[in-house]
Amino acid sequence: MSNTETRPPEPDETTAERLSSAPVESDGPTGIGILGWFRWMWRQLTSMRVALILLFLLSLAAVPGSLIPQNGQNAFKVQAWKAVHTTAAPIYEKFQLFDVYSSVWFSAIYILLFVSLAGCIIPRTWQFVGVLRAQPPAAPRNLTRMPVYAAWRTDADADTVNAAAHRLLRRRRFRANLADGSVASEKGYLREVGNLLFHLSLFALLAGFAWASLASGQGGKLVIEKQGFSNTMTQLDDFTGSAFYDSEDLDAFGFKLDSFTSRFQTTGDQIGSAREFTAHIRYWKGSDDSKLTAGDIQVNHPLEIGDSKVFLIGHGYAPVVTVKNAKGETVYSGPTAFLPQDANLTSTGVIKVSDYGFSDKDQKKVKLAFSGFFLPTAPSNFDATTGPRSLFPGDADPVLVLNAYVGDAGDSGLPENVYQLNPKGMTQLSQDGKIAAQKLKPGEGWNLPDGYGTITFDGYQQWASFNVSHRPGNAVALAGAVCAILGLVGSLFVQRRRIWVRAVTTPDGVTLVELAGLARSESARIAEELAELAVDLQDDAPALDEPDGPAAPDGPAATEDSAVPEDPAEPAVPADQNSKE
Image 1: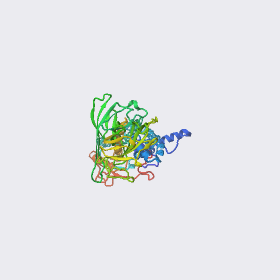
Image 2 (image 1 turned 135 degrees about the vertical axis):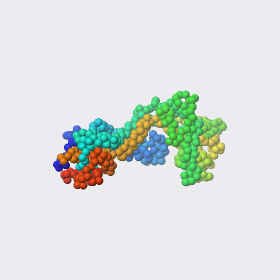
Image 3 (image 1 turned 90 degrees about the vertical axis):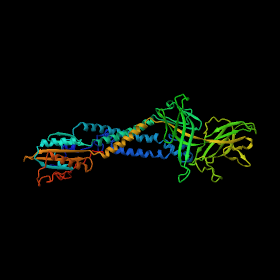
Image 4 (image 1 turned 60 degrees about the vertical axis):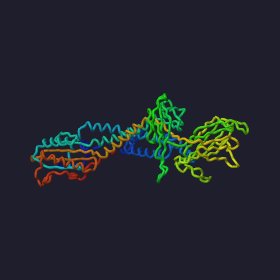
Protein backbone atom coordinates (compact mmCIF):
# COMPACT_ATOMS: atom_id res chain seq x y z
CA MET A 1 0.00 0.00 0.00
CA SER A 2 1.27 3.50 -0.73
CA ASN A 3 2.14 5.92 2.05
CA THR A 4 -0.44 8.50 3.07
CA GLU A 5 0.10 12.18 3.77
CA THR A 6 -1.24 14.11 6.74
CA ARG A 7 -4.24 15.91 5.25
CA PRO A 8 -8.02 16.04 5.66
CA PRO A 9 -9.86 13.02 4.25
CA GLU A 10 -11.02 13.31 0.69
CA PRO A 11 -14.74 13.85 0.12
CA ASP A 12 -15.38 10.20 -0.65
CA GLU A 13 -13.63 9.11 2.54
CA THR A 14 -15.62 11.57 4.63
CA THR A 15 -18.84 10.23 3.15
CA ALA A 16 -17.77 6.66 3.75
CA GLU A 17 -16.79 7.22 7.37
CA ARG A 18 -19.80 9.29 8.43
CA LEU A 19 -22.79 7.12 9.44
CA SER A 20 -25.12 9.79 10.78
CA SER A 21 -27.69 11.76 8.82
CA ALA A 22 -27.84 14.45 11.51
CA PRO A 23 -27.49 18.02 10.21
CA VAL A 24 -24.18 19.74 10.80
CA GLU A 25 -24.06 21.94 13.87
CA SER A 26 -22.31 25.26 14.16
CA ASP A 27 -20.03 26.09 17.07
CA GLY A 28 -21.13 29.70 17.29
CA PRO A 29 -22.91 32.59 15.60
CA THR A 30 -22.39 32.86 11.86
CA GLY A 31 -22.94 35.77 9.58
CA ILE A 32 -22.85 39.42 10.56
CA GLY A 33 -25.23 41.34 12.76
CA ILE A 34 -28.73 40.44 13.83
CA LEU A 35 -29.32 37.97 11.00
CA GLY A 36 -26.31 35.93 12.04
CA TRP A 37 -27.47 35.82 15.65
CA PHE A 38 -30.96 34.71 14.62
CA ARG A 39 -29.47 31.99 12.46
CA TRP A 40 -27.29 30.80 15.33
CA MET A 41 -30.21 30.82 17.79
CA TRP A 42 -32.33 28.83 15.33
CA ARG A 43 -29.58 26.23 15.03
CA GLN A 44 -29.32 26.01 18.79
CA LEU A 45 -33.09 25.67 19.20
CA THR A 46 -33.26 22.86 16.62
CA SER A 47 -30.27 20.99 18.04
CA MET A 48 -30.75 17.68 19.81
CA ARG A 49 -29.14 19.06 22.95
CA VAL A 50 -31.76 21.80 23.35
CA ALA A 51 -34.57 19.38 22.44
CA LEU A 52 -33.50 17.07 25.27
CA ILE A 53 -33.31 20.00 27.68
CA LEU A 54 -36.83 21.09 26.72
CA LEU A 55 -38.10 17.53 27.06
CA PHE A 56 -36.62 17.38 30.56
CA LEU A 57 -38.19 20.73 31.45
CA LEU A 58 -41.56 19.51 30.17
CA SER A 59 -41.33 16.42 32.39
CA LEU A 60 -40.31 18.59 35.33
CA ALA A 61 -43.17 21.03 34.70
CA ALA A 62 -45.69 18.17 34.74
CA VAL A 63 -44.76 17.23 38.32
CA PRO A 64 -46.99 19.89 40.00
CA GLY A 65 -49.92 18.61 37.94
CA SER A 66 -49.48 15.20 39.57
CA LEU A 67 -49.05 16.48 43.13
CA ILE A 68 -51.57 19.33 43.22
CA PRO A 69 -55.30 18.78 42.47
CA GLN A 70 -56.34 20.19 39.12
CA ASN A 71 -59.52 22.05 38.22
CA GLY A 72 -59.89 20.05 35.03
CA GLN A 73 -59.78 16.72 36.85
CA ASN A 74 -61.61 17.21 40.14
CA ALA A 75 -62.91 20.63 41.14
CA PHE A 76 -64.11 19.26 44.50
CA LYS A 77 -60.58 18.34 45.53
CA VAL A 78 -59.33 21.77 44.46
CA GLN A 79 -61.90 23.50 46.66
CA ALA A 80 -61.11 21.23 49.58
CA TRP A 81 -57.37 21.86 49.13
CA LYS A 82 -57.93 25.63 49.05
CA ALA A 83 -60.02 25.46 52.23
CA VAL A 84 -57.20 23.70 54.09
CA HIS A 85 -54.28 25.72 52.64
CA THR A 86 -55.65 29.26 52.82
CA THR A 87 -52.20 30.89 52.74
CA ALA A 88 -50.71 28.97 49.83
CA ALA A 89 -53.87 28.92 47.69
CA PRO A 90 -53.58 32.52 46.37
CA ILE A 91 -49.92 31.94 45.46
CA TYR A 92 -50.78 28.74 43.63
CA GLU A 93 -53.56 30.55 41.80
CA LYS A 94 -51.15 33.24 40.67
CA PHE A 95 -48.75 30.67 39.22
CA GLN A 96 -51.62 28.66 37.64
CA LEU A 97 -50.71 25.54 39.62
CA PHE A 98 -54.35 24.40 39.71
CA ASP A 99 -54.38 24.46 35.88
CA VAL A 100 -50.84 23.31 35.13
CA TYR A 101 -51.44 21.77 31.72
CA SER A 102 -53.20 24.86 30.36
CA SER A 103 -50.89 27.38 32.03
CA VAL A 104 -48.85 29.90 30.07
CA TRP A 105 -45.47 28.58 31.23
CA PHE A 106 -46.31 24.94 30.48
CA SER A 107 -47.64 25.88 27.04
CA ALA A 108 -44.46 27.89 26.32
CA ILE A 109 -42.26 24.87 27.04
CA TYR A 110 -44.11 22.43 24.81
CA ILE A 111 -44.49 24.97 22.00
CA LEU A 112 -40.72 25.51 22.03
CA LEU A 113 -40.21 21.74 22.08
CA PHE A 114 -42.69 21.42 19.20
CA VAL A 115 -40.71 23.95 17.13
CA SER A 116 -37.39 22.38 18.09
CA LEU A 117 -38.48 18.91 16.99
CA ALA A 118 -39.96 20.21 13.75
CA GLY A 119 -36.75 22.08 12.91
CA CYS A 120 -34.70 18.97 13.66
CA ILE A 121 -36.87 16.34 11.97
CA ILE A 122 -37.46 18.01 8.61
CA PRO A 123 -33.83 18.43 7.49
CA ARG A 124 -32.81 15.12 9.03
CA THR A 125 -35.58 13.26 7.22
CA TRP A 126 -34.64 14.93 3.94
CA GLN A 127 -31.01 13.89 4.35
CA PHE A 128 -31.99 10.33 5.25
CA VAL A 129 -34.18 10.06 2.16
CA GLY A 130 -31.14 11.16 0.14
CA VAL A 131 -29.06 8.44 1.79
CA LEU A 132 -31.66 5.79 0.94
CA ARG A 133 -31.78 6.88 -2.70
CA ALA A 134 -28.00 6.92 -3.08
CA GLN A 135 -25.68 3.94 -3.38
CA PRO A 136 -23.53 2.95 -0.39
CA PRO A 137 -20.38 5.11 -0.20
CA ALA A 138 -17.46 3.81 -2.22
CA ALA A 139 -14.56 2.13 -0.48
CA PRO A 140 -12.02 4.52 1.04
CA ARG A 141 -8.60 4.60 -0.61
CA ASN A 142 -6.88 3.23 2.48
CA LEU A 143 -8.95 0.42 4.02
CA THR A 144 -6.38 -0.19 6.78
CA ARG A 145 -7.66 2.96 8.47
CA MET A 146 -10.91 1.19 9.34
CA PRO A 147 -11.28 -0.27 12.86
CA VAL A 148 -11.95 -3.80 11.52
CA TYR A 149 -9.72 -5.08 8.72
CA ALA A 150 -8.72 -8.40 7.12
CA ALA A 151 -6.62 -9.25 4.05
CA TRP A 152 -5.17 -12.26 2.27
CA ARG A 153 -3.70 -13.23 -1.10
CA THR A 154 -5.32 -15.62 -3.54
CA ASP A 155 -4.89 -17.01 -7.07
CA ALA A 156 -8.55 -16.25 -7.94
CA ASP A 157 -9.40 -13.58 -10.49
CA ALA A 158 -10.06 -10.16 -8.94
CA ASP A 159 -13.34 -9.63 -10.80
CA THR A 160 -14.53 -13.06 -9.72
CA VAL A 161 -13.73 -12.30 -6.10
CA ASN A 162 -15.55 -8.95 -6.21
CA ALA A 163 -18.60 -10.56 -7.83
CA ALA A 164 -18.63 -13.32 -5.18
CA ALA A 165 -18.36 -10.76 -2.38
CA HIS A 166 -21.23 -8.78 -3.90
CA ARG A 167 -23.37 -11.91 -4.02
CA LEU A 168 -22.56 -12.91 -0.42
CA LEU A 169 -23.29 -9.45 0.94
CA ARG A 170 -26.63 -9.29 -0.86
CA ARG A 171 -27.44 -12.68 0.64
CA ARG A 172 -26.79 -11.19 4.06
CA ARG A 173 -29.27 -8.40 3.26
CA PHE A 174 -26.69 -5.67 2.84
CA ARG A 175 -27.32 -2.93 0.31
CA ALA A 176 -24.35 -3.67 -1.93
CA ASN A 177 -22.90 -1.91 -4.96
CA LEU A 178 -20.15 -3.32 -7.18
CA ALA A 179 -18.19 -0.61 -8.98
CA ASP A 180 -14.59 0.43 -9.72
CA GLY A 181 -13.06 -2.85 -8.61
CA SER A 182 -14.60 -2.92 -5.14
CA VAL A 183 -17.84 -3.71 -3.33
CA ALA A 184 -19.45 -1.18 -1.01
CA SER A 185 -22.25 -2.37 1.28
CA GLU A 186 -24.31 -1.00 4.12
CA LYS A 187 -26.79 -2.36 6.63
CA GLY A 188 -28.70 -1.18 9.69
CA TYR A 189 -30.88 1.57 8.25
CA LEU A 190 -33.51 0.70 10.84
CA ARG A 191 -31.33 2.48 13.39
CA GLU A 192 -31.85 5.81 11.67
CA VAL A 193 -35.49 4.87 10.95
CA GLY A 194 -35.92 4.25 14.68
CA ASN A 195 -34.28 7.57 15.43
CA LEU A 196 -36.61 9.41 13.09
CA LEU A 197 -39.62 7.44 14.34
CA PHE A 198 -38.76 8.40 17.91
CA HIS A 199 -38.59 12.10 17.07
CA LEU A 200 -41.69 11.98 14.87
CA SER A 201 -43.52 10.20 17.70
CA LEU A 202 -42.55 12.92 20.15
CA PHE A 203 -43.83 15.41 17.59
CA ALA A 204 -47.11 13.46 17.36
CA LEU A 205 -47.28 13.27 21.16
CA LEU A 206 -47.01 17.04 21.46
CA ALA A 207 -49.47 17.50 18.61
CA GLY A 208 -51.94 15.25 20.44
CA PHE A 209 -51.58 17.28 23.63
CA ALA A 210 -51.98 20.53 21.68
CA TRP A 211 -55.07 19.22 19.90
CA ALA A 212 -56.54 18.07 23.21
CA SER A 213 -55.94 21.45 24.86
CA LEU A 214 -57.52 23.33 21.94
CA ALA A 215 -60.50 21.06 21.23
CA SER A 216 -61.32 19.40 24.54
CA GLY A 217 -63.82 20.04 27.28
CA GLN A 218 -65.01 18.46 30.48
CA GLY A 219 -67.66 18.88 33.09
CA GLY A 220 -68.49 17.45 36.50
CA LYS A 221 -71.74 16.16 37.95
CA LEU A 222 -72.73 14.68 41.31
CA VAL A 223 -75.63 12.25 41.01
CA ILE A 224 -77.51 10.64 43.91
CA GLU A 225 -78.97 7.14 43.61
CA LYS A 226 -82.34 6.99 41.84
CA GLN A 227 -81.68 10.34 40.18
CA GLY A 228 -80.67 11.19 36.63
CA PHE A 229 -78.57 13.55 34.58
CA SER A 230 -78.58 15.06 31.07
CA ASN A 231 -75.38 16.29 29.48
CA THR A 232 -76.39 19.94 29.24
CA MET A 233 -74.95 23.13 30.69
CA THR A 234 -77.93 23.60 33.01
CA GLN A 235 -77.33 20.23 34.71
CA LEU A 236 -73.54 20.19 34.88
CA ASP A 237 -72.08 21.30 38.22
CA ASP A 238 -69.07 22.77 36.42
CA PHE A 239 -67.78 22.97 32.86
CA THR A 240 -64.41 23.80 31.33
CA GLY A 241 -64.26 24.34 27.58
CA SER A 242 -61.52 25.30 25.16
CA ALA A 243 -60.94 27.41 22.07
CA PHE A 244 -62.74 24.96 19.77
CA TYR A 245 -65.09 23.24 22.21
CA ASP A 246 -67.87 24.94 24.16
CA SER A 247 -71.30 24.16 25.58
CA GLU A 248 -72.87 23.90 22.12
CA ASP A 249 -70.58 20.96 21.28
CA LEU A 250 -71.68 18.76 24.19
CA ASP A 251 -72.75 15.26 23.14
CA ALA A 252 -76.46 14.63 23.61
CA PHE A 253 -76.94 11.85 26.16
CA GLY A 254 -77.99 11.23 29.73
CA PHE A 255 -78.18 8.49 32.33
CA LYS A 256 -79.89 7.43 35.55
CA LEU A 257 -77.95 6.15 38.53
CA ASP A 258 -79.92 3.10 39.61
CA SER A 259 -77.57 2.02 42.40
CA PHE A 260 -74.00 2.21 43.58
CA THR A 261 -71.88 -0.66 44.90
CA SER A 262 -69.03 0.10 47.28
CA ARG A 263 -66.96 -2.57 48.98
CA PHE A 264 -64.08 -2.14 51.45
CA GLN A 265 -61.58 -4.51 53.02
CA THR A 266 -62.72 -5.47 56.51
CA THR A 267 -59.64 -7.28 57.88
CA GLY A 268 -55.86 -7.15 57.74
CA ASP A 269 -53.38 -4.30 57.53
CA GLN A 270 -55.31 -2.61 54.71
CA ILE A 271 -58.62 -2.50 56.50
CA GLY A 272 -60.83 0.21 55.05
CA SER A 273 -59.13 0.17 51.63
CA ALA A 274 -61.50 0.38 48.69
CA ARG A 275 -62.00 -2.86 46.80
CA GLU A 276 -64.88 -1.99 44.49
CA PHE A 277 -66.65 1.12 43.28
CA THR A 278 -69.29 0.47 40.62
CA ALA A 279 -72.02 2.80 39.41
CA HIS A 280 -74.93 0.88 37.88
CA ILE A 281 -76.63 3.12 35.33
CA ARG A 282 -79.05 3.15 32.42
CA TYR A 283 -78.17 5.64 29.72
CA TRP A 284 -79.67 6.99 26.53
CA LYS A 285 -78.24 8.69 23.46
CA GLY A 286 -79.72 11.72 21.76
CA SER A 287 -82.90 13.32 23.05
CA ASP A 288 -85.02 10.15 23.38
CA ASP A 289 -84.73 9.03 27.02
CA SER A 290 -87.14 6.13 26.55
CA LYS A 291 -84.52 3.87 24.92
CA LEU A 292 -82.31 2.97 27.87
CA THR A 293 -79.21 0.80 27.83
CA ALA A 294 -77.81 -0.73 31.02
CA GLY A 295 -74.17 -0.14 31.82
CA ASP A 296 -71.60 0.01 34.62
CA ILE A 297 -68.97 2.66 35.33
CA GLN A 298 -65.96 1.75 37.44
CA VAL A 299 -62.77 3.53 38.43
CA ASN A 300 -60.46 3.66 35.38
CA HIS A 301 -63.18 1.97 33.29
CA PRO A 302 -65.17 4.87 31.83
CA LEU A 303 -68.34 4.62 29.80
CA GLU A 304 -67.88 5.82 26.22
CA ILE A 305 -70.90 7.57 24.72
CA GLY A 306 -70.32 9.18 21.37
CA ASP A 307 -67.09 11.19 21.52
CA SER A 308 -67.31 11.58 25.30
CA LYS A 309 -66.13 9.43 28.18
CA VAL A 310 -67.85 9.35 31.56
CA PHE A 311 -65.38 8.70 34.40
CA LEU A 312 -66.26 7.76 37.97
CA ILE A 313 -64.17 10.06 40.20
CA GLY A 314 -65.88 10.18 43.60
CA HIS A 315 -68.31 8.56 45.99
CA GLY A 316 -70.11 9.46 49.22
CA TYR A 317 -73.33 9.39 51.20
CA ALA A 318 -76.50 11.48 51.10
CA PRO A 319 -78.60 11.41 54.28
CA VAL A 320 -82.37 11.37 53.68
CA VAL A 321 -84.30 13.62 56.07
CA THR A 322 -87.83 14.91 56.49
CA VAL A 323 -88.41 18.36 58.04
CA LYS A 324 -91.85 19.40 59.33
CA ASN A 325 -92.85 22.82 60.62
CA ALA A 326 -94.70 23.54 63.84
CA LYS A 327 -98.04 22.74 62.14
CA GLY A 328 -96.81 19.30 61.13
CA GLU A 329 -96.55 20.21 57.44
CA THR A 330 -93.70 18.65 55.48
CA VAL A 331 -91.49 21.48 54.27
CA TYR A 332 -88.50 19.41 53.14
CA SER A 333 -87.96 15.76 52.28
CA GLY A 334 -85.22 14.03 50.37
CA PRO A 335 -81.51 13.20 50.20
CA THR A 336 -78.73 15.77 50.57
CA ALA A 337 -75.18 14.99 49.48
CA PHE A 338 -72.52 15.26 52.20
CA LEU A 339 -68.87 15.57 51.09
CA PRO A 340 -66.19 13.18 52.48
CA GLN A 341 -63.40 14.73 54.55
CA ASP A 342 -61.14 11.73 55.20
CA ALA A 343 -60.44 8.17 54.10
CA ASN A 344 -63.14 6.81 56.42
CA LEU A 345 -65.71 9.03 54.65
CA THR A 346 -66.44 11.28 57.60
CA SER A 347 -68.71 13.64 55.66
CA THR A 348 -69.90 17.18 56.19
CA GLY A 349 -72.87 18.89 54.63
CA VAL A 350 -75.65 21.44 54.92
CA ILE A 351 -79.41 20.90 54.68
CA LYS A 352 -81.16 24.15 53.70
CA VAL A 353 -84.93 24.56 54.18
CA SER A 354 -85.81 27.78 52.40
CA ASP A 355 -89.60 27.16 52.27
CA TYR A 356 -90.17 26.66 55.99
CA GLY A 357 -92.93 29.26 56.21
CA PHE A 358 -93.75 31.54 59.12
CA SER A 359 -92.50 31.33 62.67
CA ASP A 360 -95.12 30.86 65.42
CA LYS A 361 -93.00 33.06 67.62
CA ASP A 362 -93.13 36.34 65.65
CA GLN A 363 -95.02 35.38 62.46
CA LYS A 364 -92.03 36.22 60.25
CA LYS A 365 -91.06 34.21 57.23
CA VAL A 366 -87.94 32.26 58.13
CA LYS A 367 -85.67 29.59 56.77
CA LEU A 368 -84.04 26.70 58.57
CA ALA A 369 -80.62 25.21 57.98
CA PHE A 370 -78.85 22.20 59.44
CA SER A 371 -75.12 21.62 59.32
CA GLY A 372 -73.40 18.56 60.57
CA PHE A 373 -71.64 15.28 59.99
CA PHE A 374 -72.59 11.94 58.53
CA LEU A 375 -70.59 9.05 59.97
CA PRO A 376 -70.92 5.75 58.04
CA THR A 377 -69.48 3.86 61.02
CA ALA A 378 -69.79 5.98 64.16
CA PRO A 379 -67.92 5.35 67.42
CA SER A 380 -69.94 4.52 70.51
CA ASN A 381 -69.30 8.03 71.84
CA PHE A 382 -67.24 11.12 71.07
CA ASP A 383 -66.64 14.46 72.73
CA ALA A 384 -65.67 17.98 71.74
CA THR A 385 -61.98 17.02 71.75
CA THR A 386 -62.13 14.14 69.29
CA GLY A 387 -65.13 15.41 67.38
CA PRO A 388 -67.37 13.25 65.23
CA ARG A 389 -65.18 10.87 63.23
CA SER A 390 -66.09 7.76 61.28
CA LEU A 391 -64.17 4.56 62.08
CA PHE A 392 -64.73 2.81 58.74
CA PRO A 393 -65.82 3.95 55.26
CA GLY A 394 -68.53 1.29 55.00
CA ASP A 395 -72.03 1.85 56.40
CA ALA A 396 -71.73 -0.45 59.42
CA ASP A 397 -73.31 1.92 61.99
CA PRO A 398 -74.45 5.18 60.35
CA VAL A 399 -75.10 8.26 62.48
CA LEU A 400 -76.15 11.81 61.54
CA VAL A 401 -74.95 14.64 63.83
CA LEU A 402 -76.74 17.99 63.32
CA ASN A 403 -76.77 21.59 64.48
CA ALA A 404 -79.82 23.80 63.71
CA TYR A 405 -79.90 27.40 62.47
CA VAL A 406 -82.73 29.84 61.83
CA GLY A 407 -82.69 33.13 59.94
CA ASP A 408 -84.52 35.63 57.79
CA ALA A 409 -85.84 34.11 54.56
CA GLY A 410 -85.07 37.23 52.53
CA ASP A 411 -83.32 36.50 49.23
CA SER A 412 -80.00 38.34 48.86
CA GLY A 413 -79.90 37.58 45.14
CA LEU A 414 -76.37 36.18 45.42
CA PRO A 415 -75.55 32.54 44.56
CA GLU A 416 -74.82 30.27 47.52
CA ASN A 417 -72.67 27.20 47.87
CA VAL A 418 -75.01 24.27 48.47
CA TYR A 419 -72.32 22.45 50.47
CA GLN A 420 -71.52 25.31 52.85
CA LEU A 421 -73.55 27.42 55.27
CA ASN A 422 -73.17 31.17 55.27
CA PRO A 423 -73.67 32.13 58.94
CA LYS A 424 -74.46 35.74 58.09
CA GLY A 425 -78.06 36.45 59.07
CA MET A 426 -78.44 33.02 60.69
CA THR A 427 -78.80 32.27 64.42
CA GLN A 428 -77.80 28.93 65.89
CA LEU A 429 -80.58 27.42 68.00
CA SER A 430 -79.86 26.67 71.64
CA GLN A 431 -81.44 24.32 74.15
CA ASP A 432 -81.11 24.45 77.96
CA GLY A 433 -78.48 27.15 77.62
CA LYS A 434 -76.31 25.07 75.30
CA ILE A 435 -75.89 24.90 71.53
CA ALA A 436 -78.62 22.69 70.15
CA ALA A 437 -77.15 19.52 68.64
CA GLN A 438 -78.49 16.04 68.10
CA LYS A 439 -77.10 12.62 67.18
CA LEU A 440 -79.56 10.62 65.07
CA LYS A 441 -79.67 7.04 63.84
CA PRO A 442 -81.86 5.96 60.91
CA GLY A 443 -85.52 6.25 61.90
CA GLU A 444 -84.92 8.65 64.81
CA GLY A 445 -86.22 12.24 65.00
CA TRP A 446 -85.45 15.51 66.78
CA ASN A 447 -87.94 18.00 68.17
CA LEU A 448 -86.38 21.35 67.37
CA PRO A 449 -86.08 24.01 70.10
CA ASP A 450 -88.36 27.04 70.23
CA GLY A 451 -91.16 25.18 68.45
CA TYR A 452 -89.57 25.09 65.02
CA GLY A 453 -90.95 21.63 64.26
CA THR A 454 -89.13 18.34 63.76
CA ILE A 455 -86.49 16.67 61.63
CA THR A 456 -86.39 12.93 61.04
CA PHE A 457 -83.40 10.91 59.78
CA ASP A 458 -85.17 8.54 57.38
CA GLY A 459 -82.05 6.80 56.06
CA TYR A 460 -79.34 7.45 53.49
CA GLN A 461 -78.44 6.90 49.88
CA GLN A 462 -75.11 6.83 48.08
CA TRP A 463 -73.96 9.33 45.50
CA ALA A 464 -71.31 9.26 42.79
CA SER A 465 -69.50 12.11 41.07
CA PHE A 466 -68.72 11.82 37.38
CA ASN A 467 -66.41 13.59 35.00
CA VAL A 468 -67.69 13.92 31.43
CA SER A 469 -64.60 14.35 29.25
CA HIS A 470 -64.14 15.06 25.56
CA ARG A 471 -60.46 14.79 24.55
CA PRO A 472 -59.97 14.15 20.84
CA GLY A 473 -56.15 14.07 20.99
CA ASN A 474 -55.77 11.13 23.38
CA ALA A 475 -55.58 8.51 20.63
CA VAL A 476 -52.90 10.50 18.80
CA ALA A 477 -50.89 10.94 21.99
CA LEU A 478 -51.16 7.23 22.84
CA ALA A 479 -50.07 6.20 19.35
CA GLY A 480 -47.17 8.63 19.57
CA ALA A 481 -46.06 7.19 22.92
CA VAL A 482 -46.14 3.60 21.59
CA CYS A 483 -44.27 4.53 18.42
CA ALA A 484 -41.70 6.48 20.46
CA ILE A 485 -40.92 3.33 22.45
CA LEU A 486 -40.61 1.25 19.27
CA GLY A 487 -38.37 3.88 17.69
CA LEU A 488 -36.19 4.03 20.79
CA VAL A 489 -35.80 0.25 20.77
CA GLY A 490 -34.78 0.34 17.10
CA SER A 491 -32.28 3.15 17.59
CA LEU A 492 -30.67 1.42 20.60
CA PHE A 493 -30.45 -2.17 19.37
CA VAL A 494 -29.96 -1.85 15.60
CA GLN A 495 -26.40 -1.10 14.49
CA ARG A 496 -25.60 0.93 11.41
CA ARG A 497 -22.56 -0.68 9.74
CA ARG A 498 -20.65 -0.74 6.46
CA ILE A 499 -18.42 -3.39 4.88
CA TRP A 500 -16.11 -2.90 1.92
CA VAL A 501 -14.41 -5.58 -0.15
CA ARG A 502 -11.67 -4.78 -2.63
CA ALA A 503 -9.86 -7.39 -4.77
CA VAL A 504 -7.00 -6.09 -6.93
CA THR A 505 -4.28 -7.79 -8.94
CA THR A 506 -0.81 -7.03 -7.62
CA PRO A 507 2.27 -6.60 -9.89
CA ASP A 508 3.34 -10.21 -9.15
CA GLY A 509 0.03 -11.51 -10.61
CA VAL A 510 -1.56 -12.49 -7.30
CA THR A 511 -4.91 -11.07 -6.18
CA LEU A 512 -4.93 -9.13 -2.91
CA VAL A 513 -8.32 -9.36 -1.12
CA GLU A 514 -9.06 -6.66 1.47
CA LEU A 515 -12.09 -6.52 3.77
CA ALA A 516 -12.86 -3.60 6.09
CA GLY A 517 -15.76 -2.73 8.36
CA LEU A 518 -17.05 0.35 10.14
CA ALA A 519 -19.80 0.37 12.76
CA ARG A 520 -21.66 3.27 14.30
CA SER A 521 -20.90 2.09 17.84
CA GLU A 522 -18.27 -0.01 19.56
CA SER A 523 -19.41 -3.60 19.09
CA ALA A 524 -18.02 -7.02 18.31
CA ARG A 525 -20.80 -7.61 15.82
CA ILE A 526 -19.01 -5.94 12.92
CA ALA A 527 -15.89 -8.04 13.53
CA GLU A 528 -17.99 -11.22 13.62
CA GLU A 529 -19.74 -10.32 10.38
CA LEU A 530 -16.45 -9.55 8.67
CA ALA A 531 -14.94 -12.83 9.86
CA GLU A 532 -17.99 -14.79 8.64
CA LEU A 533 -17.82 -13.05 5.26
CA ALA A 534 -14.09 -13.83 4.99
CA VAL A 535 -14.74 -17.51 5.72
CA ASP A 536 -17.58 -17.71 3.18
CA LEU A 537 -15.43 -15.97 0.58
CA GLN A 538 -12.81 -18.72 0.87
CA ASP A 539 -14.85 -20.90 -1.50
CA ASP A 540 -14.29 -18.40 -4.31
CA ALA A 541 -10.98 -16.91 -3.17
CA PRO A 542 -8.97 -19.48 -1.18
CA ALA A 543 -6.05 -17.97 0.70
CA LEU A 544 -2.51 -18.84 -0.36
CA ASP A 545 -0.37 -20.64 2.17
CA GLU A 546 2.11 -17.86 2.82
CA PRO A 547 3.48 -17.78 6.36
CA ASP A 548 5.00 -14.34 5.89
CA GLY A 549 1.95 -12.89 4.14
CA PRO A 550 -0.73 -10.69 5.56
CA ALA A 551 -2.79 -13.73 6.51
CA ALA A 552 -1.85 -16.60 8.80
CA PRO A 553 -1.45 -20.12 7.31
CA ASP A 554 -4.77 -21.16 8.86
CA GLY A 555 -6.63 -18.60 6.76
CA PRO A 556 -7.82 -15.02 7.05
CA ALA A 557 -9.05 -13.48 10.25
CA ALA A 558 -10.94 -10.27 10.95
CA THR A 559 -9.66 -8.31 13.90
CA GLU A 560 -10.51 -4.95 15.45
CA ASP A 561 -7.72 -2.36 15.22
CA SER A 562 -5.63 -4.93 13.37
CA ALA A 563 -4.02 -2.35 11.13
CA VAL A 564 -1.91 0.62 12.12
CA PRO A 565 -2.22 3.83 10.05
CA GLU A 566 0.66 4.50 7.76
CA ASP A 567 0.94 8.01 9.19
CA PRO A 568 1.00 8.04 13.02
CA ALA A 569 -0.44 11.55 13.03
CA GLU A 570 -3.71 10.30 11.58
CA PRO A 571 -6.22 8.59 13.94
CA ALA A 572 -7.28 5.05 13.14
CA VAL A 573 -10.94 6.17 13.02
CA PRO A 574 -11.77 9.80 12.26
CA ALA A 575 -14.07 11.32 14.87
CA ASP A 576 -17.53 12.28 13.64
CA GLN A 577 -17.92 15.83 14.92
CA ASN A 578 -21.18 16.41 13.06
CA SER A 579 -23.30 13.74 14.68
CA LYS A 580 -26.02 14.68 17.17
CA GLU A 581 -26.51 11.15 18.35
